[in-house]
Image (cartoon, rainbow, N blue to C red; front, side):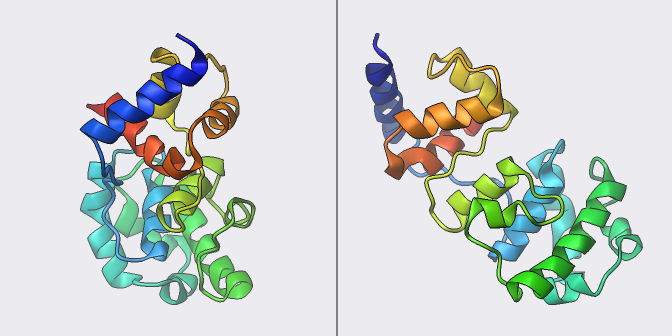
Length: 186
């Protein structure tokens, strides 16, 4: 099967079987999704969904988060992996969102990556989910499944991202991220 045919089959299969996949993280705003995705690194979405209600009640927006320091944030996120680092990232991210982005979560991957705690994967999640950009976030599931089902044989997440965005139709790139994650998890 040619690569083009493999990608076409992938899109047809998942379009039929999972037409509207969405993130499993609970959020009500771009800010909340950004916080949740930062916290989700090396942690389950289930755990993040358990702790974010209290966190968002205390810090409902970038303005309130910008006033907090890591020690104040820590008790709300103590049960996630790497809570000390993530508390520092959230405190810095809140301040930078206010000071450099006027409280608005940026839409561009390069701008998002300037925020503390935001790497390429997190930036791509925000760009695709919030702003409907053709961005492919490559996590463990996407990397493993894309290789296993023959969409790529790449050895790095960045190469997987580039191949998937090159060969997938632009209108399904963000959705394909969810297809691969959900297929990898369940």
